[in-house]
Length: 185
Image 1 (cartoon, rainbow, N blue to C red):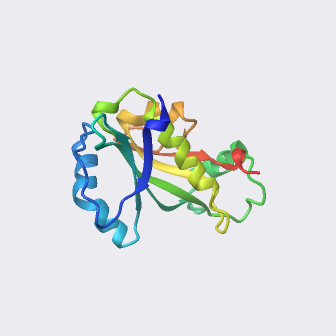
Image 2 (spheres, helix red, strand yellow; image 1 turned 45 degrees about the vertical axis):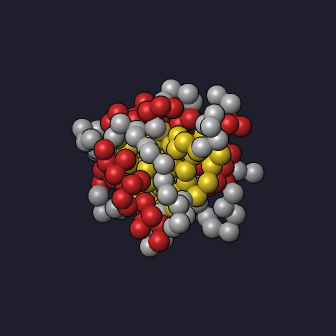
Image 3 (cartoon, helix red, strand yellow; image 1 turned 90 degrees about the vertical axis):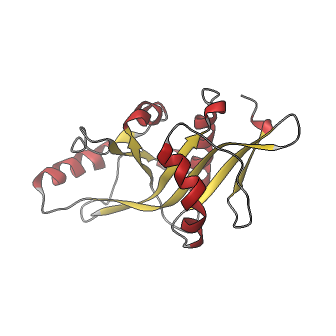
């Protein structure tokens, strides 16, 4: 994939979106009908990936939304206490004795138009997301989270995300996380 053909920008209120179809009605509908309102309310920020066509028009190749989040556990729940202990050890978290939550940034949506599927753009957007989160220097943030659809589990696993727990193993979506500390200076 030649990333120089692509540009990333933010959704703006005056923008008319080009056609977009990622094959998922929910993701298509969010972009067409809800993304601008969510952004006006400061619930999410939507980033758009454009490709310049031969006729100099811009094609919408993909998008993602980011919002704040947190990983939380209930210390009164014995099973969650055990999972949290394993989580802390796995992620080498120090000073964890009294922590009941960790700050994160959530990927609210991530989609690639069918015309651009299989070209590495999902991985490209994931790298951009990691760089955005790493550039946040004035607010603490340790993890990137996502409520991944079942058909996207493999994509997130290939991009070094882990399942938070097995409690949601039979659900259509599962909470997954990515530890950004390994990239931080």
